[in-house]
Image 1 (spheres, helix red, strand yellow):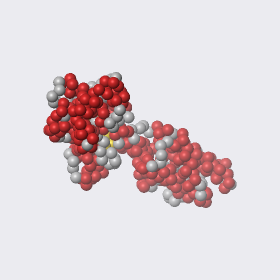
Image 2: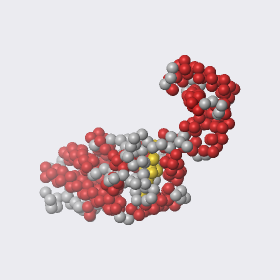
Image 3: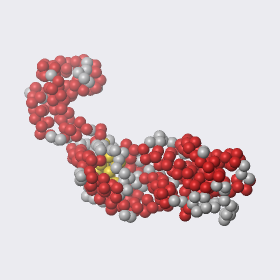
Image 4: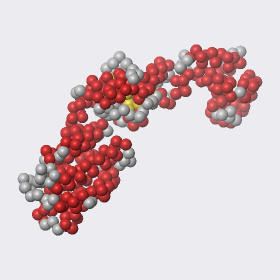
Length: 399
């Protein structure tokens, strides 16, 4: 039917507008049910984007039927779509790239939405008494409209990819520098807007090894679009928005695997410099992760606290652990471990301490009796117990 100038009757627009609210809800329900990538809750930018995209498309179609776009006949081209609507569809394409996906899911959602809309519009057409020829035109109009929308989203996706490789690259590199450098919040917000980088609620800085892993460039090409990276600096690093989600990404895991990576604590964006500082402290003093896995600072926060002032921890150890000073090194180590196990089990029983240390309960009972002899009243003082645990944990840290 391409090239026909048959125009749907304008009064039909009023009929399909009556269906708009319930049809939008049905389309969104079907998309969330049948397109796995869109099955999550309709919250935040995701929910607003989906709701806005569906409602815009339905309202625009009714406008085109009513002839508000220069009495447009079907099928129409993107020239008939308003600039405001074009921005909506381009944003949907850009959003897919930002989510680290191809356009497959969005295209599937478009096709499904068109089928649902066509079924509803066909029912309306029968009730309105449209003849067979106009029903054919209606079908062609629905699917031509969704094709035009899809092509605009493809354009937005392509523009976003070009931005990443072009002008946004230097802007995001500058943004990374401002964040890790602790720049003022207003300067960071402006730089984030310039770089088309939505400020997340939580971030983490990742330090990579001084000699980055082989194939680093390939991994970088597949990192989620919103991950900020400087892989060629003397101290290669990443900045992960919403770290829990990013650390599940395959490309992120591949880049961190075996590279001696240290993932700084998760913090709000205005404390990015702290995440970097703590990651550096952990790299300097803590053992690496198990095997090729990265060291996760969120799992070592108490150790980071102790590393903040080692001389103070040593002074606390000299004072609180003085009763162990007259013992042999082996005796001191055993009783110190027993005391720490007792403190960490909330002053547990001998069987609980034995289970923690992997020793016989009778052995634990004997050691606890000796600990009581050495430390006496300090074991009943909350402040003293706190200082004892700090001192004993400090002895376990490297150096």
